[in-house]
Length: 313
Image 1 (cartoon, helix red, strand yellow):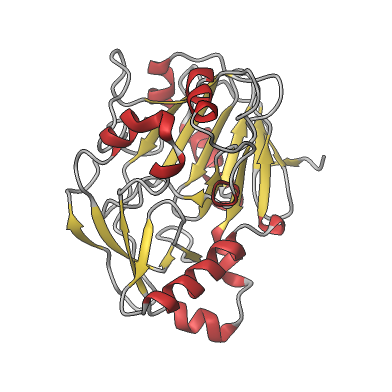
Image 2 (image 1 turned 180 degrees about the horizontal axis):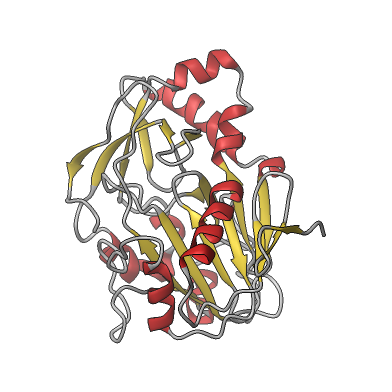
């Protein structure tokens, strides 16, 4: 693996040609100086997602690390956080839930929808999180990897006529649960997720506020329609974009280990939850923290608007 040393203390090792890098030589449990924080942020801007290994940190330490990079949000707009650390959302794939799926006749492995379910977190609010920081607590011995796709490269590799079209389009995102019929063992989470309606209009292409790069900004989970297009046009165009985002060349795949941490720029990278645990007798439990984001702005100057629900902060 190629090693790119960015300082005398941090060792940044890219994990693919476009996306992802592991950072070694830093302990997230303690205080970090401004230079180290700046180097981590620079690696995040360059690689879109960075990974840390062997970080045996407490929930409070995870939140403290996140605060070095911005303002920490509540755990989620509609889902509860940890009692002792309300900024943390527990992301779990439990054996009991999968057993309910199997009892209801849900096919495993993942459906075609789930296999292409790249998304950015919480895009139904007018200011989606700038970043997400996920730590592995209970990790299966195999399976459960997370894949990340670079939305800047996805945009850049489209033809110019398509880019020109997308630069002026806007799309509605909302939190109506998109896979309810496929998740019969998860109705309680579905009800909580939808308990407060959220909807926002975002540019289909957003301009990154720090790098000025353009990134595709649609996802299967929350994007419902492109404003002004017919149903057939939406189906064709969004389907093409979802398939384009999923191209392996844009991605990196992260193999989780206990106490691994993934820190990604939610404005310019999408991630794919694992779909290979349905037939395995393993638990997978993660803690996620998100950082307050800005209002997306498109190449045409359009600034995101709320249709329902408040900003997430």
